[in-house]
Image 1 (cartoon, one colour):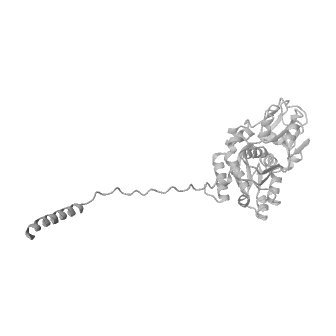
Image 2 (cartoon, one colour; image 1 turned 90 degrees about the vertical axis):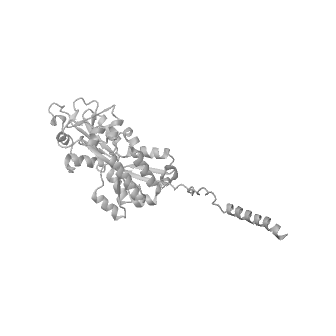
Image 3 (cartoon, rainbow, N blue to C red; image 1 turned 180 degrees about the vertical axis):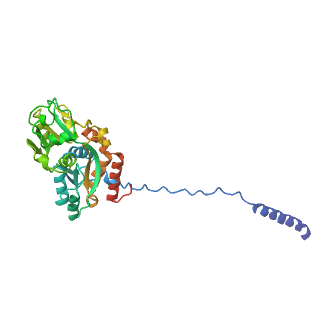
Amino acid sequence: MRKHLFVPLFAILITSLVLAACSASPVATEEPVVMTEQPTEALPDPLAGYLPENTSGEIITAGSSTVFPLSERMMQRFEEEGFTGAITIDSIGSGAGFERFCVNGETDIANASRAIKDSEVESCQSIGREPIEFRVGTDALAIVVSRANDFATDVTRLELAAIFSTAETWSDVRPEWPAEPILRFIPGTDSGTFDYFVEEIFDEDEAPILSASNLQLSEDDNVLVQGVLGSPYAIGFFGFAYYQENAGALNVLAIDGVAPTAETAESGEYPLARPLFIYSTAQIMQEKPQVAAFIYFYLTNVNYEIVDVGYFPASQEALEAAVDAWYAAVGLQP
């Protein structure tokens, strides 16, 4: 009996071994697991805190009457974009603006139609302020007469010096011009426009112009405009924007045959083209983010407004340098 049972048991054993061998065969390789990156949260925009709608507080600026209309336009734009704080802009002249900024320490921003002087930098440093310069545009100082003046259209630099110093009548400058007294209307001595004109025409000696007869000075360019409009024998000078506002009633004189335009101002061909600036400090900008926000907005939007205001854009290189200075002041990477 055992003999007969052995065969089926042996067969079962063989079958089991075969099945086991089959189950030990290599299994098809599974698809590789692909590790996908988990979505990361977007990094915060370092400039978000300097957007107009994200800042508030007080901003106090003062200085150049020439820069005033440009800063006023940028203030309006800044407020339109969402700034809800208070901005004060006083038109008191570049020199007076630097005094309030560097001596009294009363303002956050100084507006200037000339570069800051070494003595003013020293004054700033004496109260713990290290001024940073931001170029914002280009102005062409306009020499203007009334539209009623039908004789003066072009002057040389030498004639300009005589007109604003020793010449008593127009015929003293050119014999064919009227023998009428020259009436002079010029910016006050605190004005960067005055400083610039004296530097360019009188080699920084203000005595000749301040000794001229029939001379009226004012820090208010609108007063100068009205003075020039009052007589065909009047002459004055101020920033190009104030000429442009009154171009229907005033004539602007060419100098050495070159009229003030965007092209001649940028190229330096026009003799009385000059840069426009605003100044602040890193400490002010870090302690008052609203000031840093306004300056950044100013620098990145000024070229959209400057021509309409009446000035000419600074070069791209100058604006880029100003923006780089802003980044360094607030401690960010461009």
